Amino acid sequence: MATRSTAPNVASLAQARSRAPASDTKAGRLRALLASARTEFIMEAHDGLSAKIVEETGFKGIWASGLTMSAALGVRDSNEASWTQVLEVLEFMSDATSVPILVDGDTGYGNFNNVRRVVRKLGQRGIAGICIEDKLFPKTNSFIGDGQPLADIDEFCGKIKAGKDSQEDADFCVVARIEALISGRGMAEALRRAEAYHGAGADALLIHSKKRDPGEILEFMREWAGRCPVVIVPTTYYDTPTDRWREASVSLVIWANHNLRAAITAMREASSRIFRDEGLAGVENGIATVKQVFELAGNDELADAEKRYLPTTPDAPRAIVLAASRGVELGPLTADRPKCMVEVRGRPLLSRLVDTLNGGGVHDITVVRGYRKEMVNLPSVKTVDNDAFADTGEAATLACAAATLDGETVVAYGDVLFRQYILDRLRAADGDIVLAVDAMWRERDPDPASRTRDLVACATRFRAGYLDEDAVAVTAIGAGLDEAAIDGEWIGVARLSAAGASLVRATLDAMAAEGVLADSSMIDLVQRLIDVGHEVRAVYVTGHWLDVDNPADLQEAGCFL
Image (cartoon, rainbow, N blue to C red):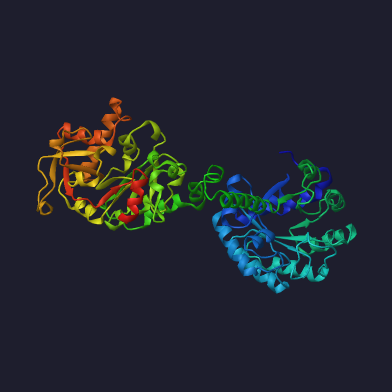
């Protein structure tokens, strides 16, 4: 970035150096921007989220615009939002960011006494400075009407002195905004007010104009001759090259309302498109993901804090939900979302599954996402991604969450619904690897060939009174078992003990090393465990579950619930 020309501005630079920041507080950093030997820039924000975006973008400071904060609250920029309401917004903005905030303080919200109280309260919330304008309370936006009345010079100087006397941080900045050009009073009046406000102790002057060309501003800069830092707001003369401000030795440029204006355009376009289409497919790829919203809101920090501060139970169970697939049999229902996020009676399948897991005492849930992963956005779960979901099987999806295979773990497909007692029985059963197996599988579908089934053969057949017995050994699992050997269908839910989770993790590693993991299903994984001599057990159930593969299943799911 080119530096400002120093020739006409020697006095300004000398004064800026004499007012070097006393500390590295936010106020100190704002003072450093005003005293910089180059033209600096700050960007408008109107709430905590937009403030985070401004800082994330790289701006060194934030302009908390009175216009945009008022508009975001749905009121006019005429002091219709009280200063305490503005203060609440500013507190969120300050807490959300580490860069200094210069707040648009309108006319100071009243007389000198209001200014004193406002400055103290701003300082308590880490706000770096306030800009007050020399108009009457309640204020009218500078771009509305002509010839707005101005405050008495001496009265306004009293406000400046009151603000400076009330600041608790030595670097807190009071910027005096001159409205003489806006009100048609001319250059002589603007310079007269500038001299008075500078003498009253203002840390900088903001000279404002609503003309389409920069002539007034450049003339003021020449006449003022750098006696203190000058701030400008090029909203109406926006097409002026930035180098003109550098050449004129402008200290700080405020981009004053553009985030809110951009947001209005984007929200109108999105709302109109959704209203017109009666769907989300047309906008989803052109807007921020929910994950990005969570990132801006700091969800990751909260997760880390929960680990540090919430009480933990060493043997607390966890769950891994395999939800990477699209579910093509559901047709257009999964055009813009994965199968696990298709709604049943107003809520996604995954949300229903999470409720069941929570009801069984399982609250630490990791979902492995794939297709349209940004749509898997339940706040109560953690996520990992299988970005190769289109070319890999379920075992590879599970392997994406291998780090979570530690301690008692429930593994479930993301498209399955089941009654609470099934999870309770799985968790109570003996065995390191236990599957829930439906002994009534033949009654489940009048056309057994209509879908692929995870069929199971066991060492002990289901019989009346079984529910009082322990889990039984699984001898084989797969879609192609001999009819006479089949004892049931795996419903897609399993429970691993700590030892079982370790076995599964080691088996996944071995499959990856052999190059067979990518093409393997969960059935392949379970059968491999059996083949190498690890005991896999089954708990028999008699219905009371459903996997959602097609529209007919979806309709049945509504009845199931």
